[in-house]
Image 1 (cartoon, rainbow, N blue to C red):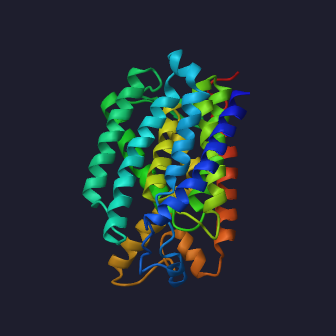
Image 2 (tube, rainbow, N blue to C red):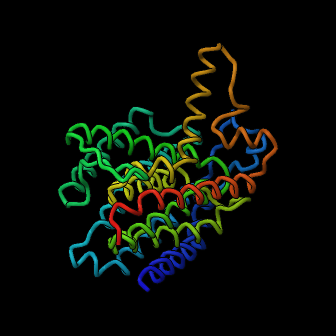
Length: 328
């Protein structure tokens, strides 16, 4: 019942916030600047309001602090920690979006500024989750049902690398209408199912709120998008995706549940590296991966369906892969 309530509160709050925030963002002229080196047909999206991630961020927070209040007062604060962690990334994204909107350009904070802020957040979160008993340096390997015990220092390096990489991978995936939203929805269901199966009710409430907020946001973000989540939303989602993985102590599950995020990022890295090595040749028609398929004739709706479907299948496999860790 609490999961249904959490979903419903986040969905309703996000839906109503969209009715208010989207017109407000339009009045502020908080429009997205489209990259000139992207697909030419994306130029029609110029001026679409950005920073729409505020819609589901606020909706999720409302659900966590209402439906999850008994968890917070009872000392079960895992959902709150993940929310606060993701909010740090959301704030970084908001600053980035604000700079872009203010100067009417596609570049906000520098790469170095983003990296240092994200790294600091990753280290602080990892230390906090260990001190609260949610995290161990025992790296669980899905399917094999074994744990690799790492020195805490090495685990910290691993965690920081995974967190910063995952957050930026979600950010790269947010390149067409509804894609990052649709891909993250099955991930939210996966985390909710794992949390409830293992008895982490507070994380289950958070996962249900995440799913509800994204369902409502998709109403506005599906093609043709009325609003973009911006870095505000995509960095927040990146924080949630890796934050929940570490809160549930299954970071290696990200390899499966984040399969699209990883593919998008690898396509970008490979494209740049190959371009430099061959002095101008390309592997993909355009990177990241969703642009490659767009250039091949795929519609944004088809990309949304295929990439979200692949993620759903990967999440089901991931659930099967970790289900025997704590048999119920």
